[in-house]
Length: 146
Ligand code: HEM
Image (cartoon, rainbow, N blue to C red; front, side):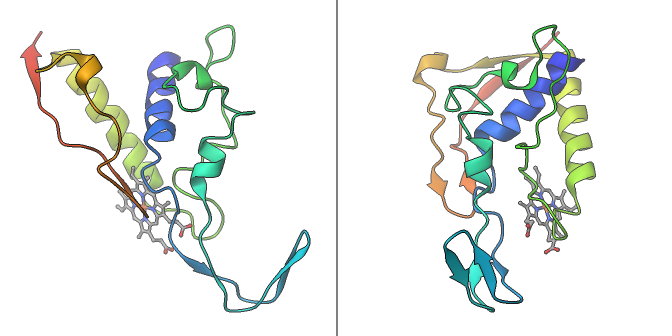
């Protein structure tokens, strides 16, 4: 169970489905380090900077469920895991989405063996479009009943 949970988290971290979150507006003048962000400025919170933080997730460009596992194999929670954003406007569908991803993935893997139609090395995992969303490339696979 901790490993499956780690895989689900790593998939969400790795694909970074919505890297820029949604645009927000500053409601008052904000002092941030040496900068002033005037009231009304549109800001895009870059979720990708947390999800690909190399101190929190060593070798962030590698898919590694170990990013969410402690050395003893238990699940490692990370405050940098923010694919649903954070704060007052955090995605209200987070619980539903996480439940669905977990249930769909485990049900599929329990009942089917998945095989790509081309060799896995030839599969591109580069998004076909990267902007507010990372759109995964289209590909085919065989679902063989277990
Ligand atoms: C993997 C699935 C999903 C991801 C990664 C995701 C991610 C996000 C992100 C990053 C935001 C922007 C939050 C912000 O403005 O700071 C957002 C907003 C939102 N999401 Fe999701 N979401 C997912 C699924 C869902 C589902 C299943 C629902 C509804 C059933 C949903 C409903 C919404 C709504 C209504 C907003 C706008 C909230 C607002 O502006 O206050 N999302 N989501």
